Length: 307
Image 1: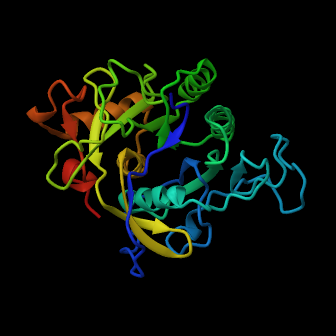
Image 2: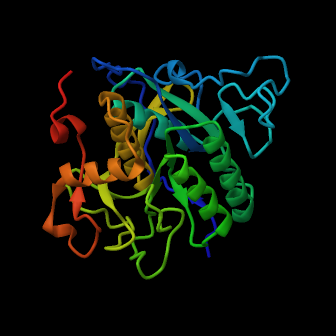
């Protein structure tokens, strides 16, 4: 039984091309902090390096200046090695960050990098690191937590951490999983916790069909987004394709971040979830598969925002 895993399905050869630059909409008022709980990020990647969250009370002096229990956590923390090395030796986290930026289309998006995953560690260790990362994101007041991973085991510690994030008004966007199964019958977590701040995301292809590998559930999965053959950043300043609910999750996180930036409204997680579902495309093919029976791919198309 899987206790914790990432969700890239396919990694295609790297491309030496660039994605279109992130454009900025008018009337931006504040930064939106997205905590990426993943494998770390290539902090020097041209697409990402200007989008790192900076801990406002921390300094480069090897001390815990802000008293949060983590010394020199300038841009986040590595919970695997218990240090501030948030580099990505896997590629997954960098790919996720790139997708969020491309969908948010804003220079105001900042990434709090929280490295929890190590393929050499046990699922239980990765799960405990997940809980620590969620607690950190909550304490440091992230706006959105992107979690493109999961497992079969329900964890009271993890659920409690996300519930605390809910109390702080933090949106939690989670991958539905890549087992191709009905998670109403066999749960998948953290996407499957029945908490109002969670958006559980399944993946679709370019033909707007649910991927055969994507989990689904009329009660447990909220919405569908593109997740097949998605081009994004990879370590070393490169680009490449990945497929899975991880990519669909990042897509929704990016749209949510853009929505928060563009509106003067103070968004509650539940409001964002309802707004995305209401303005997404209803699809009868998703009946008995997805709770909202909705798929979404473009914020501008769906919400008629003007640059």
